[in-house]
Image (cartoon, rainbow, N blue to C red; front, side, top):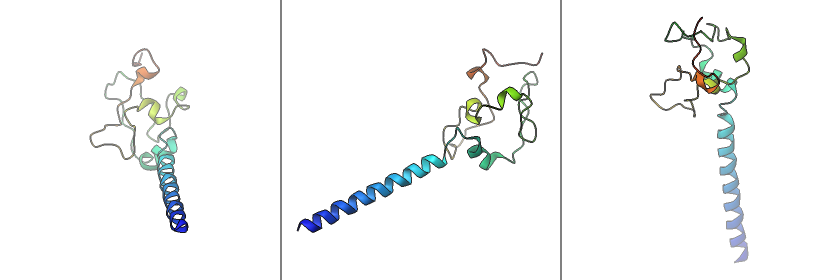
Length: 109
């Protein structure tokens, strides 16, 4: 009788551990603070110019930066509306929030 209870307890613990490892692996695979995660899908996408011609263009067509000061930031520092993978339908990740770091959206001078 005790051995069946121990077997049930051991199998329940093993199942819970496997389930926990599965969730941990999914969370690690979706580390949005690592630009490589974003570039797995977006590396070959064209970098659009800002909607307003008055705003500076941050990315080169190749995906680098025209403004080197931005190289140290992660994609989600500017594209802060992206919070999960896959992205919810209707999320436009092309928009950026410059006021996360700047007092106002920079303009061409």
